[in-house]
Length: 478
Ligand code: 6PG
Image 1 (tube, rainbow, N blue to C red):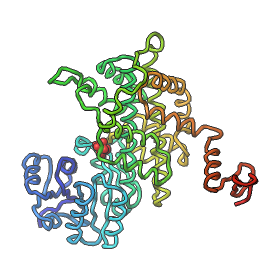
Image 2 (cartoon, helix red, strand yellow; image 1 turned 90 degrees about the horizontal axis):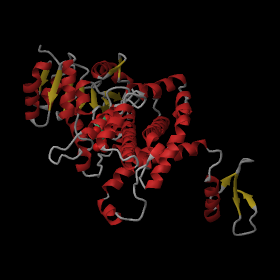
Image 3 (cartoon, rainbow, N blue to C red; image 1 turned 30 degrees about the horizontal axis):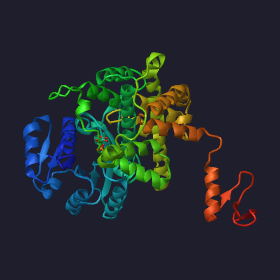
Image 4 (cartoon, rainbow, N blue to C red; image 1 turned 90 degrees about the vertical axis):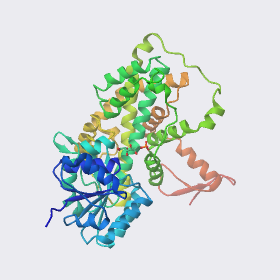
């Protein structure tokens, strides 16, 4: 009998191809399949010497090439194409076999598919994979959901090919059914927030301190040696250093300032709203992209009155870069705190047993938001698994308290000079909102009761109450 593959990959565009190569490079025999045969052939031609591949040119051939339980990784476009591929393979599989969707699927689709396939005796594992093309090849962060049983066979393979930090794999069984894709979605939401905060830092250093992109690249380079050490800061410095070959201008000045998105950040915000979790940092990041892309609106409004960006001078200028570093750090803690709270809320809503410390641990390497900072989040949850928010955990609490003078001063400068900082500002508003003794929400309750008899609760006794606003203004129990 010829050798069988321990896993198969179907959908051999760059992500699928690199995952397959990563598996083969780790000594696993990989069956290959793609809708058009050309991709399968070219993978074997170009990279066949990297390991053991079994090319298959029909769905049946692919399934037959796999040892049992069969494990098939689907790497196709989210949505309809994923359903089509599942329907192509599911009828050829047997109970106990595993279908893995490693694309950026919506977790609600994953829940639906998992249930439908479970009823047919198959395991369906929605898996978050982060790290882009390079990560897929050299070691991504992997976030599998699905059944515990499926992780028994799949886990060792995925742990093997994932990134490693301090010898630990950046892969863990996140939770049942859609938990893996949910966690990947929030990862991307945090990614949007982190990118927006970094972009605001750039805008401030340019607009308020008058630094050039190359000088700002150096500032980011320095930050990358400290507590902000992260992949996103590192690549930002590289992007800012880059000079456009055609014009000789800084690359950042020849790129259209309209940020696009594939939609995972938007999903995070939509779900945040459904769950009632205030993820304002992520939301502002998504809205900032939308605003940047509102070309017609922006050209209609360009030239509206406001301050001009006069660069700072003297001691304010001297300390400005350090102040921005503090503001960025504090805002970043808020964005991550909000994201982890969203995972906590999702877990409660959908009955997932998600270990937040493990999530932080598998984000330390391989993924787009990988950062030194995630070590501190891992430790914070290890020390206090029921932590209500990262902001109250010892180290973060002190660091944010220490950063707040700079944080407030940077935002004041931005407001004074008319530099938009939606990410920094919303993060500070969240911080001040959380730490407030009393919020004006009491007045909102009064307004609601006035026009709609929506009732309110009192601070001094239990029950619901309504004031007879249009009558004698006495209070009645509702
Ligand atoms: C990752 C990335 C990846 C992808 C995003 C980009 O974790 O590897 O997040 O999933 O690059 O989808 O998203 P936008 O196109 O929405 O910015």
